[in-house]
Structures are given as structure tokens and as C-alpha cells.
Image: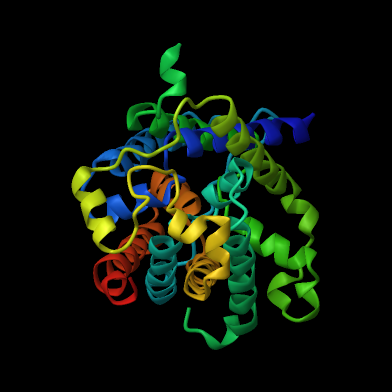
Length: 137
Length: 185
């Protein structure tokens, strides 16, 4: 039952990524060119509602459907890893025009080439795992 | 109901993404897609090589279901919910891209110059897809999250690390498009 629920959330997410064109390489390029409000509108409106949702959950101590407390784990404080990692991610986002969600959506659309990007992204993650202890965090 | 078959505007799409985050929170999970790339490394046996991949992948099975759903969603969205899939971007952006050699700008969902199956026989296109993918995977894990984990989940919780990461995402993207693109295209 839970499995089906996660699958359905994924289906909805995939449809949104495709229909919003957030999975389009062109939209990402246009965003970084500041030539359209579209992507900023998507991220901005998701964020404003997101902040509201998190605040309401915290304020009213809303529990999960299983009766457990909803916990927000603060990320470890640091500057280097977030900034450097963020810049590296951004370079890839601009070049491949897809982040880790839309990548999978594009497989369903039928783009065979995106499988190369996914394989490379898995390899990039593997490289990080290998180098983790040598990198400044 | 015809609007369903048109591209969805930002004010529909953005709130729906927030809804995804809410649904996951309500079942006690955190929205974050790049974590799946780590799980996939573990499934490929990377735990033998690096401790970072030694974890019980079953704790992330729910997230892999979201991935499978996202693939199905892409299929449904493109095959059953779209009349036309060409992305109408700003005409200035189209002119700009055509000057860089992207003739498909304004007429396709993804640039055929990079993503068409025939482009795979072109060494440059293939290399760019590989490099782009590696940067996304490496960067997401180094930064501890991607667009969903930091820009949506983390920023919604007003976390400073996520703000730093998202600023990084934009610095990287701007460098790529404004400084590196003119050199490689």
C-alpha cells in the first residue's frame, strides 16, 4: 500500500516536471539568461507555499499519517561544501539542463540519450564517495 | 479541461511541487531526488569500495519508487497529456541559441543537437552529456542535495546551508551559460 503511494507521488511529480517544462533543457538555459520569469515563478511559488507548510507543521505540531512526529533535521553548518558543491552542481545543471528529478522523467518521455547523463551522474556520485574524505567539508 | 494539454503555467506547477513535498512530509519522508543516485551506487556494489555507500538501501526503497513513478509520469505527461511538446521560450533566447548552433531552439522539448539519438555518434555531444552528468552527480552529493533537497525542502525550512547551496547552484549555472558556453559552442 505504502509502495503504491510513493509510486503515485512519483507519477504526479513526473507529470508536473514534464508539463511545467522544468525538465526542458531550453527552460534551464532561458532561466540562467534571465529571459523568462517561468522557472523563477515555479521555484518561487513552490518555496513560498513550502515555507508556509513547514511553519504550519511546526506551529501546530502536525503529525504524519502514521502518528509520528514530523522531524526537520538541520543540515550540518558549513560553507565550503555547500558553496563548492553547489557551484559544481550548477555547472552540470546548466550544461546537461537537467537535475536529478527531471532526468528520470525524461527517460519516460523517451529520450535514450538521457540514460548517458544518468549513468554519468551515478558515476559522479561514486567519485564523490571515493574522494569524500579528501575534500574540504 | 483543454488547459491540461497546454504547457502548465508556473502558478500551477510551483504549488503542485509544494504539494509533493507536503505529501511526502505527511508520510514522514523528505523530498530529495539526488539521494537516489547514491542508492543506485550502493545497488551497483559501491559499498565494497567506499564506506559512503555502505548503508541499508532498503531504507531508501520508497525514494526509488518515486523515481520509477517519475519515469512513468514523464511517459504519461508526454504521450497522453500533451498536444504539442515544443517549448516556447523567449524569442531572444531562440536567436541566441541559434547563433550558438542550436537550430532546434523553439521547436523541440530538448535540443536535438545534444539529445537526439544520432547526436550520440558525435564525440563532442557525447562528451558534454557525460561531463554534465558527472558534475550534477558529484556536485549534488558534495553539496548534500540538489534542486529538490535544497531549493525546495531545505529553503522551505529556512536552512542557511540550503541557501548557500542554492546560491552556488546559480553561480555554477551562470558561469556555464555566460562564460563556458561561448567557448564550447
